[in-house]
Length: 143
Image (cartoon, rainbow, N blue to C red):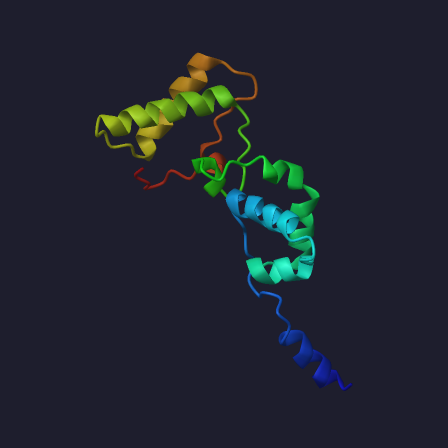
């Protein structure tokens, strides 16, 4: 086969060009599909979900985790898990923002900076450093 023929066959493969990230619920369903139809190959699952075969392999390797996902919960619609480094700050700030929205208050970058400064000085948590420009870009942002 000529070099040109090889290139053409690679382009015509059914592998998707763009990276596809499945939600937790989709990974749950993929694992169920794999269990319900054992004759379904990883390549066939990849085509069905428009992902690459190695992604299917990674998901099935962690199938115990994905089968525990409840597809009816809001968490199942997430694509990634965000690691929270300081849960107390996350919880406090989240509650404050929720209350501010309930009171129809406007939150802008300066107000958020002030709140973070207040939390920083009052919580005195180890590892809590204000990294405003690295952690979040608040220039001209209204939340």
